Length: 298
Image 1 (tube, one colour):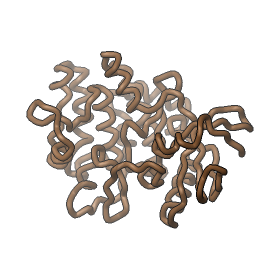
Image 2 (image 1 turned 60 degrees about the horizontal axis):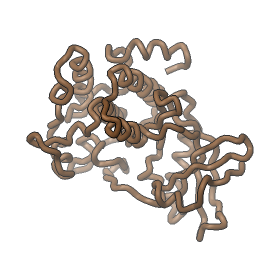
Image 3 (image 1 turned 30 degrees about the horizontal axis):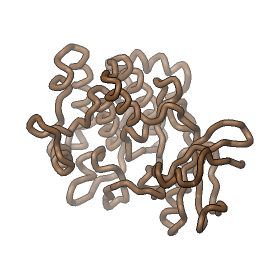
Image 4 (image 1 turned 60 degrees about the vertical axis):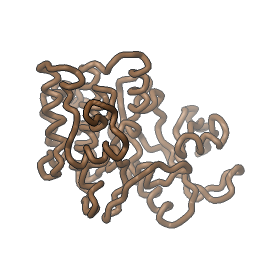
């Protein structure tokens, strides 16, 4: 296929290795994720991410379009790989949260239910096929132009792909790379003995859901003030999450969300649900999820 960047190549450097492009064959806008081939590990990880996306076909997973292997653009100084994916016009959930803050309003409970149902649908699909994301966070959840349909993306994670602009990561002995502020306690533990398991995604899902509702990180408070980075990590390790009712007040609906999030953020991983499939019948979003079953298998 042939794609033309919308803008110049500098966009890769200012947007974590990702840029919009025009697919001349279909006339559609796509997303291009770039990797400079510096070593075999980076090249292998990129091919693995592309293959993972190729295998996943779900309405709430970013669709794979193509993989360009060892290509040298005119503007590049060396060989590169490109993963070409579906374009999501609404940006990411991180963008959603910032827009909510700027507008001075919170995500409604129904909006949160719809989004949570879609995430559980996609994660159930992945976990049922032994695929684990390992780096769930608002920036890796993408929104379509209707601003309510969401899709999970970045399955290799920006950290594994080593995009042009890297972000801070933590790595365990089993090679799990994730973003510290959204990583489960076992990933940040000193012995780094975390195993690749769907329970890591359950933790990430819960943090996304709470941040969607409150517009702040679940562990970002320390004695009533904003916590520093190392204090957030300590809060994560010790399970000191700010309960929803301290931010949103106490109602039966908030309690329902709080019960779900509390269940999914146990510091001891064995006390969390084993996978997203176990969360399908949660009252918070079961009605929305049941409606989706008729559209595709989850």
